[in-house]
Length: 332
Ligand SMILES: Nc1ncnc2c1ncn2[C@@H]1O[C@H](COP(=O)(O)OP(=O)(O)O)[C@@H](O)[C@H]1O
Ligand SMILES: [Mg+2]
Image (cartoon, rainbow, N blue to C red; front, top):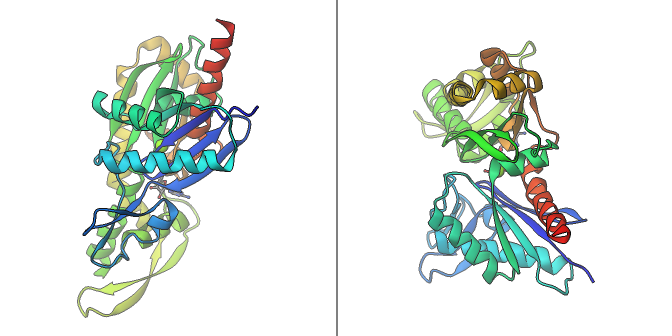
């Protein structure tokens, strides 16, 4: 008998599904496209993402978890059900799975209940809602049960979650609505102001991923960017440097550093001593921005490192949490 116990990372940018013993089996953007006239869902996930910004008038593509809170509950529920069924379909099962879901922090009790109900409706036997920093820490290989302070900074699409964890719980935390999507928006604004060039968010994300940096580097990289000249209205190509992205991203990255600083200030002294020994761990896709480690390190004086595969650690941690629960339950 196959028991597909499952962990789901319901992120603002992507949804990942982890199955015990199989690893991450699904990774798709948290996007839903629907028909404005009939209100019927047209596509979910990768298929819907391709429609973002390119939809004809009657079809709209939305990211229901955009700002780290569930802005559209019904759409979130449908999306969750679709992903659970897709992940289960690939891996034949004979029993209903026990599922743990990690949702962006800052979610209200009503939203947590909504996710729990949607997961049960989608076929779960048992649902566990997990705090994102705990899942990120487990996924990053930190032994969270020890009485030792660890700082996790998860930079996702919509939110950055900062937490100090000890003895399996969050001691101090903070969540700000500045993360990867804001980096893209900052690049769009910078291009408009500095170069009179209008670019879309997908182009901005591309620039960020290819040459973006949070801290000036010795070797300067460049990229050619196509957009619309705001003066002539015609297409135009310009060359952008990595130093310019540092300038564009300065405000957003500084807000993240300040939030880290604020959490450190509220951390009890013993735990802060542990953090300065062990360092700060970055997770989430936003952590892939070059130079973020150096930036945080230079402003806090604490060694900072990015988890291996920062985009999948939360899903893995969420799944491992289920294993941890199963372990606990068999012992009982
Ligand atoms: N190589 C990269 N460099 C910089 N940012 C990246 C890179 N890859 C992905 N990202 C960004 O990571 C963010 C998504 O991170 P993710 O952890 O999946 O978010 P969430 O948990 O909110 O779903 C997006 O803003 C995306 O642009
Ligand atoms: Mg996340």
